[in-house]
Length: 165
Image 1 (cartoon, rainbow, N blue to C red):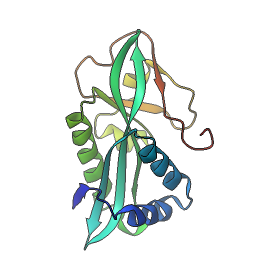
Image 2 (cartoon, rainbow, N blue to C red):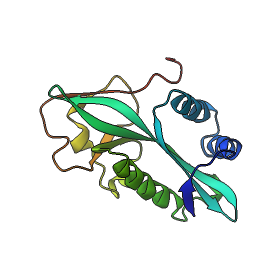
Image 3 (cartoon, one colour):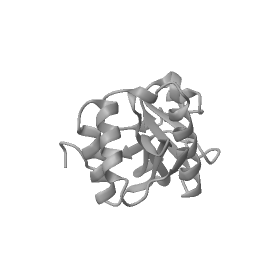
């Protein structure tokens, strides 16, 4: 079952992030995004009353050809190793996209496995309009509002979080 995170879930979310990523970077990221007020959606997946997955959606500053657009970033998304390959990640991503749309997102961006995220309509091609200072996996984007990512040149400014905070 996927549901909105509730007060009191913080410990279970932190434990799930630590087990999924085997480090505390993502736990710090989630806390800073929430404390900074940019987190919009926080979802958990439960199995037998135990939190086994988490997804966070946050606002980012985005412009294309000088116009501001409402873009949200999907990160992190995780499932405990013991519960992977059961469709939990899929349900988290689908719910996160839906909640982002409900919150007014014109587009959602993500970094990570292009094959996995491609199943939901994310593509590197749609994200090519953006220039970003973040390195790592290729940026992918999903348009919620048709034409939202149309333009020649855009920027995405992620919230200051990890070592840059």
